[in-house]
Length: 180
Image 1: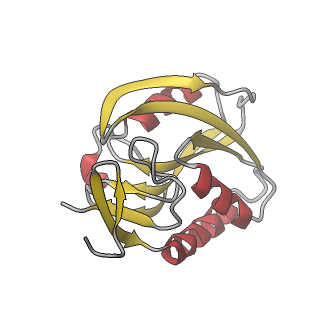
Image 2: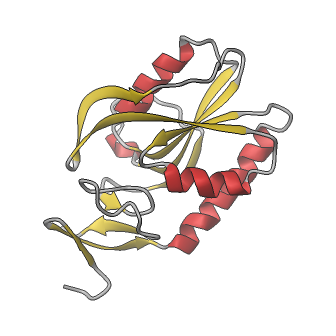
Image 3: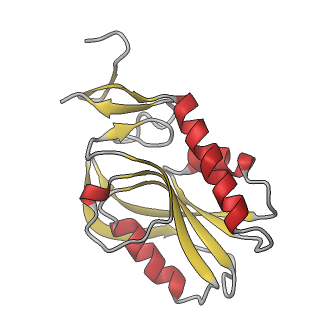
């Protein structure tokens, strides 16, 4: 095993995206959001658990007045999507006529984001957009317009920076991808 690689459960992962690269992309995303939402006081809605690092680093760089709230959804088991979205901890803020930006760690199949957007639209927000750290366009199974993407990646299983493999790896500062 390469000394830079890590072992999580039964899988080996190699370095993929450094913390410096992640922060640089988040900074660009924060500037774009600041321009697009100037004078709108958006509500950032972070999807837990995976987006906690992305949300924290993004909000530290967003310079406009805004709010943040957290919801928890689940559609993953092991390394593949179950296709079923289950709301664990719901939305407590009134989003009627608000500009909402959903913060996701990764959009791959789109099951989670698609289901969440359908739920949010029933509350009549002024607008709803998605900002994600990572996106796997070739995996999408729903027609989604994800306006804010820090980085697109191929269909590789990744961990770190909030992303996990069966609970492990969220605390890693860099993003690692599975060794085939």
